[in-house]
Image (cartoon, rainbow, N blue to C red; front, side):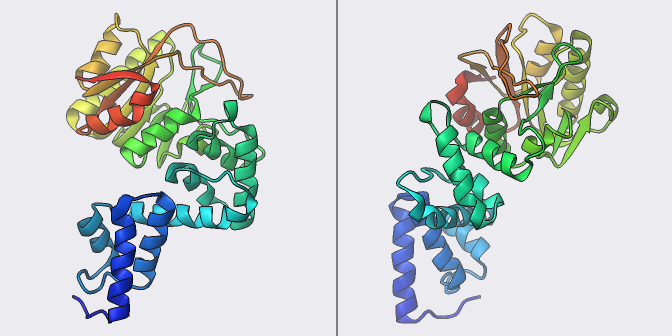
Length: 304
């Protein structure tokens, strides 16, 4: 399994682990410490792989560790551009999708255009997508409130869903444009008719809000959740607590969050609409605590 470290290597390992243990003081320090351990194979005295080391020593999977390493690298490369740098790993993470020459451009644009001067991970993601796909509006998921007009979920809700579930395996009510932000492994468009397709895995759903359709989407969601086809699911819907379809969604779920303000869905030009009623975010799965921790910033919630 292992080989003995030299005194220099053992000292280096202790120093890097001290950085991580302190606190995970900042994600940049942690990412750089993990990079040194990984690239120097300083874990080899106790673990056969970097993945085993991260899991057993720090309780983090390798994917997350590599994300922190990549985000730290982004911040290091941004250092010369000014005093405002990403404060969290989630702010830096979207920039890793760009080549270094574009990372600085994207970050500066995110800082300059941040609503109310507050840079969020969702805003950075939107800026990155605008740079990567300049010909298309960087919008997430679509909802058909009136049957014809497309309305997109604000990106911060998509980012929160991905934080909870890790990935989105399926979006059953989407579009080509929507999936550029949702990034579901599989998505069904209006033309595909997701009601006739299989549902599975980790599901994000913001269904069509037309009355006749939402009933069918809620019934299909309940069917697949009850059968165990859906491993985790997050649904954003109007808080129509008096309806049968809302009761169906809640009956198979483990937590809900009621946003403190109405969700202002975006039109195809990126302009927020004027919502006529409030919404509910409903979670199905075995990690309601993680869901409430992440979505609690939008309002108040409870386990079911």
